[in-house]
Length: 168
Ligand SMILES: C[S@@+](CC[C@H](N)C(=O)[O-])C[C@H]1O[C@@H](n2cnc3c(N)ncnc32)[C@H](O)[C@@H]1O
Image (cartoon, rainbow, N blue to C red; front, side, top):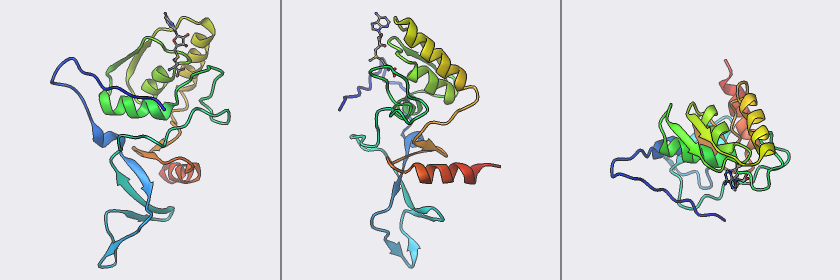
């Protein structure tokens, strides 16, 4: 468990909660006049778009089977960074991480069309970050985030279907 602090230097700050909506499987599919009440009935299942809560239980460490995984001992998942960047920075904003590690912040910023700058003392970690940044030229996927919203854990199957359905 980790705390996340949101700090601003001015009363005028950027915060876009609508960009970090969650697509949750519906447990109780209530209907009114036979129609879904605040949820969507799709070919892939029944889902409801909701605002994120204060406790985020949909984040996992980058497991070995995930393409973003490196040997960095404390690597942050791109899904976590995506939430932070989308909610608190507009497109083209500059994102700075003074402890970049394997590059998760910069890689996610690149995938989400933000500019980025990072500092890392360990040369190997810098190389891993550069490799991931190069891969982001051709692969903009962020596991757990498709179609403009976030998915719960263990929904990779539904995410892949969603991605395939969106292909031209
Ligand atoms: C908690 S890790 C960050 C992990 C990163 N968020 C990621 O997803 O890979 C902190 C990083 O800060 C680096 N670091 C520690 N002291 C530093 C310093 N003085 N200047 C630059 N980097 C430093 C460490 O090498 C380590 O990779």
